[in-house]
Image 1: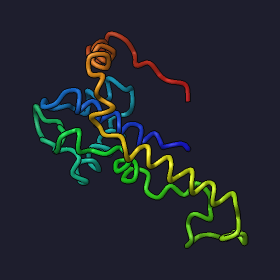
Image 2: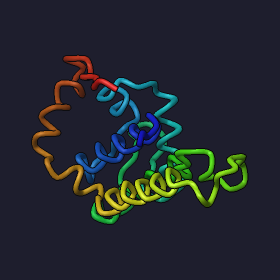
Image 3: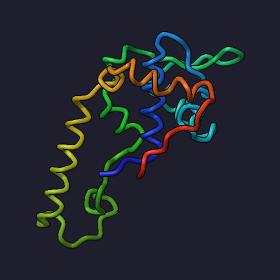
Length: 156
């Protein structure tokens, strides 16, 4: 299973908002901490706001904050929002399927089972869970917020 960078940065934006709650987080804060382009984060913040995960405040001193407690934001729901259907293989999408083996393919059934298991784990995880090691996360991002060091990039 692989999620898009869009989902990754949506989760990182929400995690930062959880760490900073109840303070506002600026798009520039996310850009600085995670080293991603501002327009990308602005699009993510807009979608998260439209979906009711965050509230935004425009203008000087503006930013965003969580719209509800971190305990109520389920990671699986955010993944569904940002990824859409997790069609790992063509036959998962019945409208566009051209595979003649649909309905009898054991691989397809196993991949569907794997997808359900993957999402079940994410459905059991909240934003509060992924921000629960607040002090360690805050210590790691503090130098990034001040622009002292460049973001650490994980190997993908």
